[in-house]
Image 1: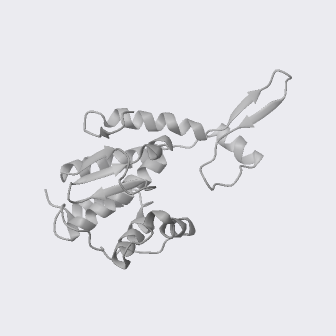
Image 2 (image 1 turned 180 degrees about the vertical axis):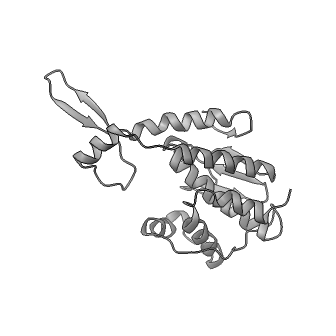
Length: 202
């Protein structure tokens, strides 16, 4: 994939295919060595616990289904396009960030590392940033400074580690509130698109 790729209506399918291909890295596979020894190999997302043998067997029998995530990505990209947001696969300006919303440019960036992690990670980051776009719309327009929507801010331990990490060092209390809203709701599959429809204008 090029250093910067704008996601348009015409190349959405290409992006989804790349994500589906990257999903395969998390699927365990059986390796039979020359000496007849059998071994299951797999990759784990950062921080994930090792899989037990029954979990490996279950994944081999029934691989994860990411179709809901892919559908959510398509819905989100369509909504973002409808309200004039440019979505780009490119490195965010904030060092270490996975994604970034720049209201002045009307540009939403998602890092290449997120694409390499597959469909679910991409959907989560896209949804997170779409919530920030809705916060801008709530602040007045797509190009306004984001304003808190009043959503739940109950975040899990992993999100708390992210917020207390170097990426967010030095952010203001109002910026942290915006991030807490996005982290707390990023796993709600269709929420980002719904918030865009409620708060943004064409």
